[in-house]
Structure formats: C-alpha cells, structure tokens
Image 1: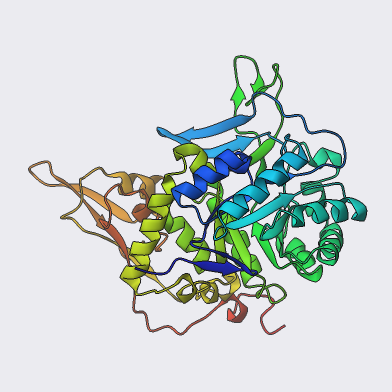
Image 2 (image 1 turned 120 degrees about the vertical axis):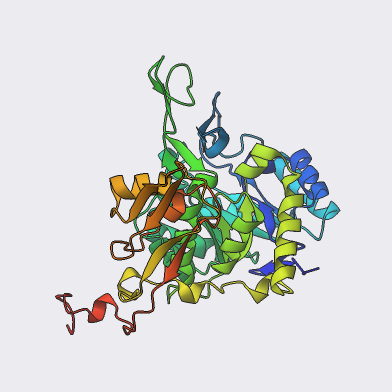
Length: 424
C-alpha cells in the first residue's frame, strides 16, 4: 500500500489527516480517542491566558441543511478554550509523551503585544509539542478583543507577531489565516516575511446561517439574540481550495508549506488539497458530524486511490495541479466543446432541455416518437459548451462534453483583437 506519512515544516505524522483546532481537540480525553482511532495529528484547541477571561455561551452551533443532507455548512460562535492554561499544558505533555509519533501542534492566541507571546511560548515549549499555530483567523468574539481575525486582517500585525514568535521559540511556527479578507496572498506574504514555517488555511468565514422566523433572531440564539459566527464544513471547500491555490502559485509564497483546511469530508477532498500543494490537511466538521471513525474511510480511500494511480507517497502528487491553475485571461478562447447525450443512458427526465431552454442557449431539442418516447438532441450550432446540461443531469456520464477540432490556434485575452490593452 502507499505510504501516507507526511512531513510539513519539520512536523511528521503517520498520515496527513489532522484534527483542526476546535472542540474535538479541546482536552486529553478527546485527543487520545482520536489517536486511538488513527488520526495522524491534532492542532490542540486554541490556548490563551493574558487578557479578559474566556466565557463561552449556550447555544453556540448552527447548521445549513440541504435536500436532506445535514450539516453541509456549519456555524459556531464558540471562543478559544475556556479551560485553565496549565491544565491544557499538562494534558498536552501527557498526550505527546504517550503518542510520540503523532503530530502535536498547539494553537495560540494572546493579545497583540510581544511580552504576552513570549510568556506563553516559553510555557508551551515545555510540553514537548511539535509546533505552534498562531490563530489569526477567529472571526467572532476574540476579534472584538483585538485578537484572531482582527490581527489576521492586518498584514503588518501578522508579520510582527510571527517575527516575535520566531524570536522566542525554536518550534516550527504555523500561521492560521482568515478568509475574511479581499486578497489572501497579502497575509500569507506577511507571514512569510515574519519567518513563518508554514501557513494553515482557511479559518472560518463570517456568517449568519439562518434566522428563526418565530422569534426573529439569528441561529444559534442566546437568550433570544444571535451574532455572526464562523462558517465551515463542505460548503466552504471551494473557497478554501481557491485560497490555497493563490498562495501555492504566488511567486512570493510558492515555497511556503501549507496545511489545508476547509470542508474536508472525504478522501477525495484531501487529495484535491494535496494536489494544490498542501502537506497536511485539517478536519473538523466531518469529525463533529460522523465521529472519529471517519478516519478509516479517509485513510483507506486515499490509500486505494494512490495505489490505483501508482503513487507511492503523497509527495508523488503533491502540487501536481498547481501548474494548471491560471488566471482567466490566459485561458484558450479558441478551445471549443459541445454537449453529447448518450440516449441509451437517458431516463427522459427532460431536465437538460428545461434548463437549456429557460436559462441558457436553447441548444437541446425535445421530441417524441409515435409511441410517446421522448428524446433529446443537442443542436450543435447553438451549443456553446457551457456544460450546464451535464451538471444538472441526474445520470452519471449520460451527458458529456466533447472537444471540437476546429483547427484554431491558441488565443488568450491578451492577444485577442477586441482587448483594448492588447500590445500595451
């Protein structure tokens, strides 16, 4: 079988699946259960001491359900750990001693001053952990105190705090980035300038997932009131993949190790993050939805897929998709595809015709024979290859997109005669 062991920023683990900093990594009991189940590592739920005490609220979770599927999106208004710092540190040391082969990364968040970071780093080092992760991403509660996303949205703060941490500890420093920013490359560059050994992303997205129309308040509610929280789960994965790709192909950060986070629910999700350059992946919502045993499916699925592709290790395909990520202006404007319908697989639902007729290019003709059997035919001259029909079709491989051999040379927007900037 393929070797799933990974090494990122000097941190090793038997597989790339880590539990992210969150309720599943809040205490020794949880983490030991995770390691017994087979998880490769954890990022211990964020520690902090300086500043006002942490008091969590009840309720604190919200969910987006769709078409019978629970928790495709997950929202929380929970803060960092509300357990005493020394209790956490003692438990981290005990777990690391008992499980020396697993990655133990400790998430940290303290006020934005040098002394506070120096003091907590000195205490955390004594646990024997493998690395620290600076939480610059939490979008609620702690950001109102000048921490979390309040730091992560200001590149200069990221650079300075990362620099302090690199001064006061020899541990690898991961910087966890907030997605609540217009250009993810800027904080990544700042972390790199500060000496970060790796970045982790994405943290949660500002969100209100639903409104209770009986009490007219956002969910979850606390005594009839609600607040925005952090959004995660499968629904955020496309956003996370995009941001990871931006950092992976940015000339200023392309060699910066990445730990990928955001909606990893399946081995295929993890493979996508690794293909975009991630050295490890962090999971939270899936574990909270299905329990720790989901690790069996993640490990077995990734192993089987790698075996089928002939990959001996994750390094064999890590970053393989990056060269094929580009900007729209570089796409080939002369490349053409048209839809093709396999009539033997067609169940005559007509959905392809409906969506093309109502919302696209009227490129699918509907007909009915003398026996009342319906059929659908692509009008080649009208089809623009948008592939909407393929996406809505309920039958796998019934509709496919076929390349048109038009003999036209590659042409991008930069060379297009209608581009007013061409040649400029």
